[in-house]
Structures are given as C-alpha cells and as structure tokens.
Image 1: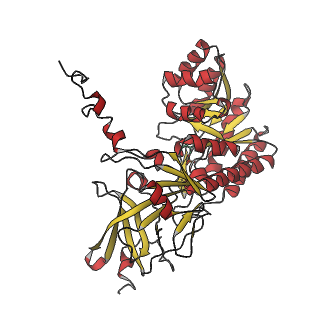
Image 2 (image 1 turned 90 degrees about the vertical axis):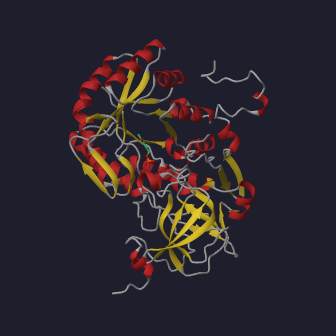
Image 3 (image 1 turned 120 degrees about the vertical axis):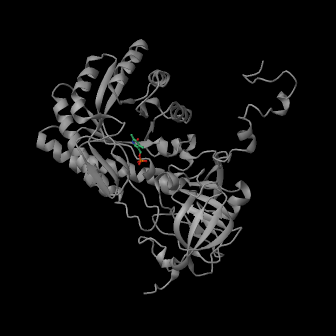
Length: 481
Ligand SMILES: *Cc1c(COP(=O)(O)O)cnc(C)c1O
C-alpha cells in the first residue's frame, strides 16, 4: 500500500506531522519565544534579525528569565516536598550543564548552590561571587592541586569517590589545618536513562562505591579527624522522565544511611540530578513538582520503616535549570533534496554550525527540533534533516523534523532546548571558533561569553608567529638547535 506522503516512510514513529510547521511547541521553547506580525521569532523580547545583525551566527541565545524561572520553580518544588515531611532541601545547580559567571549569579540569586567538578568550574563559580560554603565539588579523579584549592577556599562539601581519595583529601586537609565537610558517593545499582531504569546489584561504571563497600569506607572517613562526614551521595543518570528510578535508588540509599547512622551522625542525603526536559514535542517529562514529591515521599517512607528521622536532602539539577533557556541560531547555507528511491526524499538543510557547537546528536543520538526563525515559511511541511558544516556524515544537528518546503539559503534556523550540554561540550573541530553566548531579557541582549575569533584559534599554534613576535631570534620551538 502506498503511504499518504512519500516522507512518511522515512519519518520515525515519534515524529508527528505538524498542522503548522512554524509553530513553537510549548515546553520545548522558552516561554518568551513568539513570532511578531511579520512572522519573525523573538526570544526574551529580542528579534532574531537583530541578534544576527549584532552578533552573527551561529549564536547561543540564553533567555535569562526562563533560566531564572526554572531555577526558582525547581527550588520551590523541592522546598515544598521537603517541608511536607518536616525536613529541608538544598538545590545545587550542576554547573557542568552550562557555566559562566553570569549564569552562576542568576541561579544563586534564585537560591541555588553550585556544583563544580574541575578547577575551571570552581574558579568560575568563585569569580561569580558564589560563597565557597555553597559550592559542592565532585569528580572521580580530582587532582591534589584541585583538592588543595577546594579546601583552601573552603568549599562546603567535597564528594569523595574512592578509598584513595579519602586518604588523599584527609592528608591535604590535615596539612592545611582544616576540617573538610565531605559526602561519600555511593552507587545504588540503579541506572536510569529517559523512560526506563535498570536496577542491578553491581553497576559496572567508574563513579562512586558499591553499596556493600560503603560501610568500610565510612568507617575510615570517621577515623580521620580532618574529615567531617555529612552523608551519602548518589546520582543515577541524566535526562530521566519518570520518578520510579529515583524512588528505587532513594529507598536503597536510605537503607544504607540508616545502618550507618548507628555509628555516628549523618545529617544529609544528596540524591543528585538527572531530571529530564523536552527536546521535541514527543518528549513528556514528569513535572518537577511531581518528581520532587515522589522522591521525597520515597525517602520519608523508607525512613519511617526504619524508624529514623528524615535527613536534610540535596538535589543537583543541571539540564532542568538551563536546558530550555537556550536556543541556538544558525544560518541556512544550502539545501539538497536527496532521493532514497522507493523510501522517498529527504531534504538536507545545511547550517553554519554543527557538531562543534552541539555534540549531543553525534555523541548520544540525541533528538532536537527546529524552526525557521527569520520568517514564517509558506510551503507544505517536508521531512528534513538539519546538518552542520563539518567533515563528518554524522554531523547532524536535527535528525528528523518537518519544516516548510520553502526553507532556503539565508533563512535563520533556530534550534530550541540547547541551553544544557551544548556550549559546555563545544569543540574547535575543523578549526571552528566556538560561538558567543548572548543573554536576552526584556528586549535587551548582551554577550555573556564572547565568541572565539580566528586569531584565538591561530594564536595557539606555536608555528604561527604573532606579528610582534616575528622578529629574528624570537623563535621558541623546542626542537630548534
Ligand atoms: C551531571 C551531574 C548532575 C546533573 O545532571 P543533569 O542531568 O544535568 O541534571 C548532577 N550531579 C552529578 C553528580 C552529575 O554528575
């Protein structure tokens, strides 16, 4: 039987044919995204043509109001869920999703703390004025120099990941005359990814320590006077939609927490991040209020069974805070109709960025959506694949989308939900300068991370002398006699 449209055979099941291929799907785009009377898209009250004229493309656009609203909503959700059981919640923004001093200030002004996992992230948070006591430090292989810096500035919690790190940090804190607050990362055996979770007794991954190995490590931490154990930590994955995996993990951790409490205080329990967001209209993440309630209820139920008080709780959302605040703007360079014979045609739309500014499709097979931003298209919806400009066939920006058939060179294309793990994972592949990040709010736009220039890129090549250094005798190559 012939399908209604030749495109149908190539479209994945989850991709709906939109009644309007110019629409802006609620929950995927920032709430401020809208089209003006001429059809041009604006974000945070700033039109995309103005953004292109002032800052060029590709361009990361971050909607400040949207980021703040998510931060505040998540904080309120966990506060309320904790208060319902007579305890407190701390919310850390996982800086690895996107970190700049500006964003660190937004989230801390909304009441969040900040998680870091490298020296660079720590210095950025400090430069933003985040109080060291409100910073958490993660990682499975923190360097001695990183731990020293973290202890010196007085970070609020270091999450210990291994037996070796316990001894290493204990010695550093002792040498610096400090008593460092720490958590121990444990591995609940629950690993969650989007819709499903997998629960095993033994998880085969690099982070944390298995549940059954934790008591001996806790005993060791408690013997070291320079370490002050506050509690356990676990993080089960990322882009998780349902609450079942979180609840299962929380129950397992509380069992351990209860046993360890018998030999000393354990006032805190950190359950990590991983709350999912919508990238396309097919994604349906559980509202954060429901997740927060389900997770805290699971902790409370397990504490009641074991007859222990509910500890203070901590959470670490990254993507859920910043993901939906980001929109990437590209310019369309070429389009190409590729015939796949009986299976139909696919329109390839090439833009002036790609896997260097968004590695997630290549790295994880992540799906995104897109819209023509500079105008409304007038053609029928056609199945497209938006691709970048890199020398890789896997350089895909949006794998499957319907766009108006008149999409054409010079159009601005906008890809929503790019606030998390896009700039953070950006590279200079193919000697591509990384784009600027511009914040928009109330009709005003300003650069918060400047774009790289060709000079930035060439300047790292020791064989390309800057004009002022080109004088004879100024060569510094190591191999020169
Ligand atoms: C990555 C990470 C997070 C944040 O994950 P999201 O999916 O962005 O919420 C939180 N905690 C830890 C330990 C992480 O590694």
